[in-house]
Amino acid sequence: MSTADIPADPWRYLWYVARAQTGLVALGFVLLSVSGSAWILLPWTISKIIDEVLLAGSAEPLLQWSIVLVVVAIASSWVFVAGYRSLFMAESHARVRTVRNLTDHLNLAGTGVRGAISPGEMVNLSTEDAHKTGSFIFQLGFGWMGLVMTAVGAFLLWRASPALGLTTLAGVLLIGFVVGPVLGRLQHHQIAYRSSVATLTGQASDVVGGLRVLRGVGGEAQFSQRYRAASAELREAGYGVATADSWVQGLKASLPLALIAAVTWVGARLALNETISIGELSAAFGMTALVAQHSGAMIGMAQAVIAAQVASRRLTAFFNTRSDIADDGTATGAAGTLRDPESGLAIEPGRLTVIVSAEAKPAEAAMERLARYRESGAERCSEASRGSAAEWGSGAEWGDAKLAGLALDEVRERVLLLRDDYLFAQTLGETLRVDGARALTAINAAGAGDVYSSLGSTMDGEVHNGGRNLSGGQRQRLRLARALAADAEILLAVEPTSAVDAHTESLIAERVAAVRAGRTTAVVTASPLWLARADLVAWMWDGKVRATGSHAELLLQDEYRSLTSRQES
Image (tube, rainbow, N blue to C red):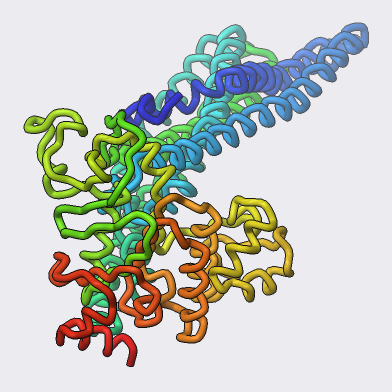
């Protein structure tokens, strides 16, 4: 099932998660139903032994009831373990399914999630929310077990005396009536708390990614103030959840005890009036104690469903995001110069083009448009005013073809955009995705020999999640090595050597120019070490290409010379 088929409604999404594990869930429900019934039959069996053996003074029924007692005891324990295992497996599969759906949709939506979902929120979705939408299946099973035990217990108590059965049923309904409104308040507070968590983690993620920029522009104090305010809101939301949850927990512990007391009092009066036997009184106490104990499981089930619904709201909001890149192009086989009319940037085939810009963002945006990770201004018009991608007006072009009219898969296959991309936890070989010889060539060209040696000089060396076991410069060079190993027809790189020293940068620029000779390469940088090896330099000003030529030719212009001189110094 594609992510487009994932339900948009939170409740329907929970059903979608549970339905995928129908076999395990059904087996778990059946086994827990058998186990719950066996638990209730234990005190009923003991009551028969009391009445027919101890009080009657007859040993004849002892063997028969002893066999029943052993069978019921085994069923209540062993069958319970099997049911527990079945539901736990269903929960685990559901969590994995949700995480897989998140990954698939992230790949599908791509840049469409920018601004809609923060990196911190993505962490929450794949951990806390995936766990809650999976664990509700587990809790649902135990809630069902509590309902079965209540039904069986009430039936057996009704057979002994209608008053006992009615008292038990009335007590369970009263517990639900009292706890229900508190659970509603708990849901309200959990929604507010989850929203505050998303806001705070988003801010934390932003500061991790832009701490250096914040310090450079003196924005630390402003961020700290915003973060303290968001933390205070989260604390208050947490207090609201804790208050509602404490009421639930208090009622969950006290109301079942009140039910036991009520049934015991009614049973004792019936026993004194000889309406029920001593054995039936003991059965009433034992079954009510078990029902009361598992009524807590039913409350826990309600809590889990509420938490799962809150988590499902966040997940479906993410699944409702859509790619901001249209994928309705069908043309193939484009060739020639890559052009971005919005900026005037042209990447000629078979040459190394270096883009110099006082501000990196406009140049990066142009590279994103040329790689189709961002639409041009003309392409972002409303759906009502445009036809298919092939009919769009001005936009990035590849030779004589509109880039938007090409099949997106072909663009992704032939054009590679290198930015500050993520490094996943995997081996070095899995990161580079090519055989040993090609991998070593790419590592050498990217000046990443120290990365290779620091990981044990083997392709089986482990790169930690996010490249945490590597320095910033090592991570940057490993990303460059990964891009070079892919050997794409067109490589577009944004500041690929900003975190390395001048000597290393000079070696990298020389080796990349040699390795990519005859292939189309574009690099956004103002470093003279790259400019010295460029076949063509494009100078951007205010997001527009102001001049093109060789580095030596452009040095005749004062603004360009000033910009590159600052970079050199």
